[in-house]
Image (cartoon, rainbow, N blue to C red; front, side, top):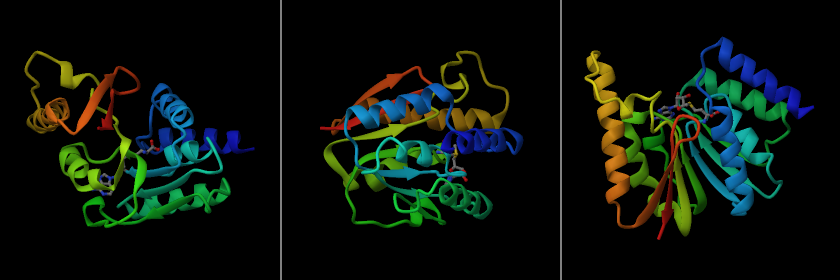
Length: 194
Ligand code: SAM
């Protein structure tokens, strides 16, 4: 039953150009959550609830807080979460991530929102992560552009790619976290708090 819903969300995302995690990225995330017995997740960037639903389905013990600023996507996420009967596991907030405040501690923070703000997001919420906890960042390859050696013509795209490259450097140099980069989905960073 929920499998059908997941397929419907995937189709809706494709038809309405809503970016959701790629298949091998979300499979990796599910596996990571299971193997590390993750129980509390903060997700930055809900879109229509696809990744939150898939993460919550890993185990009934998992609690997820997720944030989305776009009203229409937020409403669609609420609708999908209700259809999946996961309201008791997933809490969605309709606001900008930078305005969201919490004192809660999480085992895992999943960053999947505006790429230009990844460093800010990381710094804002790293104190909400337990020691030994993980921050997972998606889209670090940005469709292959972050590794492109030739000059990118579009100025906007060049700036965006520059910001992601800065974030990758920030992760490599961060002494409080150990980051591993994986060529999965659109490029994933796994940063473990030391
Ligand atoms: N995690 C989702 C999934 O795989 O199903 C996909 C999230 S999508 C890639 C990124 C979402 O983050 C977009 O829906 C966008 O509106 C939202 N977003 C981007 N920057 C944000 C911000 N500063 N505050 C809140 N939401 C933001």
